[in-house]
Length: 42
Image (cartoon, rainbow, N blue to C red):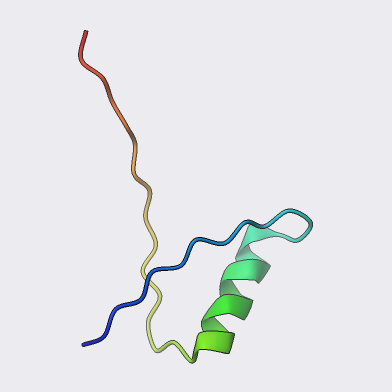
């Protein structure tokens, strides 16, 4: 299975519209999204 990661800055459009267009342009069968939260210990 090939995996590709993209980082795209959406400045004028809705984020959802940007994600859908990028997925269509790349011919994706599956889109996996998530967030990474940085944490620090004091």
